[in-house]
Amino acid sequence: MLNADFFTIEDEEELEVTLEGVSVYGVGREDSLLYENADVGRISLLLDGNSEETGFVMQVGDMADTLTFHHTETPFLYSYECGYILHFEIKDYGYTTNFIDSIDVVRTKITHRYEKHIKVYF
Amino acid sequence: MLPVAAFSGEGEKERGVRIGFDLSSAALSFMEGEGIDAGFTADMTWGDDYFIIADAGYVNHIRTGPGYELSQDALYTRAGVDYSIYSFENDVIATGFRYGFSTYRHKGKNVLVEDDYWGDYRGIMPANNLRSHWIEGVFSLKTELFADVFIGWTLRGKVLLQRGEEENMEEWHIPGYGLSGQSSTLGFNFYIFYRIPF
Image 1 (tube, each protein chain N blue to C red):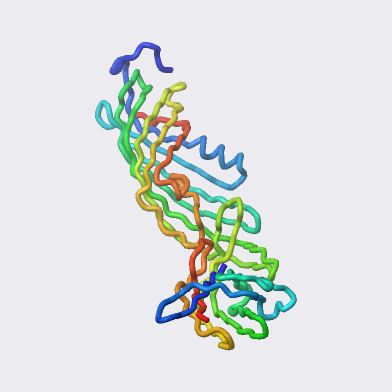
Image 2: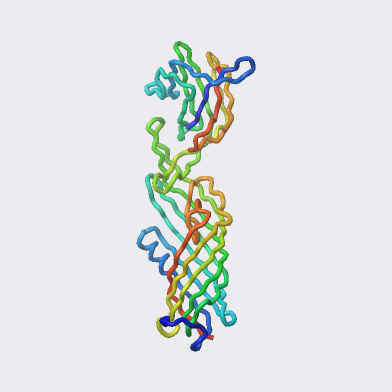
């Protein structure tokens, strides 16, 4: 899962923030929300292993922004009993700025281990 | 077979090269239905109390699990020296050390990763060639069943020196050693031998 943590900058200091009423869905999957009206300071997003590009729409109230990630995928055998999962590597990314200020990708490899991958600034 | 009273050096000890086949690994592979695990060993007397040992094995496994088929091809080898701590005629109890090396390749076919949101992924895990090496302390027994035919077992304490880096697997089986995630492990082999006297 791609993990995105939320921050704001105040007086040149990076502060973690929680947004209220966040809804997230995949581009092309408007019928299925990953997050629905949630109060969150972090979201976890699953990239599409069948595509080189995955987009997500994040809505807060009447405002919406789109995050797009270009990536590669690699099958990873987690265990003989459990089988395979997918690891990803982010090659490029983009985003709109209706309420997002900026995004910083801190780790481009997405594995099964819990790690922080991107910072979203508001 | 071994006598009850312990003594060494008694009886006539014949010299030669013993060629052995690892019955335990072959039987385990057969029972698990995963493929071939053929291990061979050879030892030769060196002086009165020493043996030079060399092992070699070939592994070809196909393991199936939830949403995958994983193939492994491997060659492994071990070499070392044993010291006889007890012997009677051609029966011997020995202790020694080995250096082990394995070269192997993994490939994942028919990989399925289920995804209810974006749709299931189907693909392959590319083949990756790896090398690992380790050292062993061993304790063994060999006894003569009848003329030039022996059976024996070897108990191994293994320490992994270098496992190779497999980016596409969390843990895997290193042929000749054991699981890659274990820095040390135990092993046991049961052999049948034929001695070529000289």
